Image (cartoon, rainbow, N blue to C red):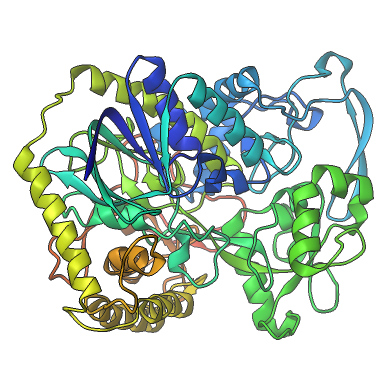
Length: 616
């Protein structure tokens, strides 16, 4: 068995992982990134619309700044975010965007003179100032007061990731791809690295490191319908949860994106609506302006998704063999705009739907998209519970998103948080020990080998891992979706507890040798069900509605009792529910809790006297 020793081990080689790696490598430390796929195929490359940063270069961004961005982010989070972290992010985002430009990202730039844009299906004229010519431009995104989303057509993740990977290669960062972590090595107080499995040979490897970073992206594939790539299944989160020491934060905060295409659920960017696209119902009539007169299609994602599902419930959905959906209309933007600035959307529609968006409507509906929850860290990116363990990007609950993140804030977070946390990782590495307990490492490897033996020999049973996964996905899809209530959540939790018991009885149908996807899934399946239980049980216990967590039986946002962050820990393997603890959502209030300005609803304020929110 191979053993690798390094200063920093990054679990994940997407934007967040490589950005932290670059900071450490630039300071002279050895870095290894583990990745299930080649680094440039990380899910970061699928991000389309852009990165939010208050540059204020375009005429529609005039007057913008970090304070305005901060206000939008806190409102977007429904006051669920850590305001100190949100401030760190908003202040550093403009610096990070300019740094990305310096490294080679080909941002779209301001073109001086008269041009046109669309809002609500109507055409408007704007004039860009000559002195702004060539500066990084921006487009509109949901929940923002200004245009501040920096972009490269609709392939922002692709261009930034390729640039980042080039930089990492320059600095000597080693990427071990087709390699998957299956467990963390720790002594109860300090993380020592990880055990990983080579997906080509099936061999186990040990990686020992002074510091370990979890940057493996989201866990959307625990749901049946998700925009996430198949690699975003939560395996790294499951390994963290299985330590029994590290909590996951706000796992019930799951974002549903309004425009997943039906029936493949691949994302079409919010940039479609930011550039002026509209949502239509079965009668091919707009409806969002009725529910949200000010923001319409560009309210925050949680609000748009809820109104879409409400509209379908009102009988306005389009019937299809794959269930009801609505329409996204970008035809009025014109062929040149669609083929150039929305080219990935064009290709996705052509290749996966057989639809030309220049001529035809796009079938869409809200689909699981993003995980606000993740490995709970402090503002320095250090995980709770284990020294030497850090997390960044979507994998982390840092927590600048609270209960709803704004479009463009997460892609920006990867490079902003990666830079900020990378500095803190370097500080940690300068004083970190390189001592690793041989007995601790040997025990962890022995336990993982025993897990594999029991699966291949069917020592615990012969449950089919794919049927177990399907049962887990169905339970979340049915009971822990956009609208939630006590009955549905209780059924989901009960079902998932049964699925968890089944997951402990999985036996392989194959021999488990070599490149074996059945074994890869079986190794993490019990942990994935535990993740699902963290989501469902956390949602059941949170008796309020906040951001993406919408309880039909508790429709008020309850700042009196629930201005908190959920911490879910799995104490022992024998438990069938996570242990839930809570901490204040923020210790710093630059902006006291108030109305978001969109979304309606009522608020129970911190003083306890119920008052109405903005009604539409």
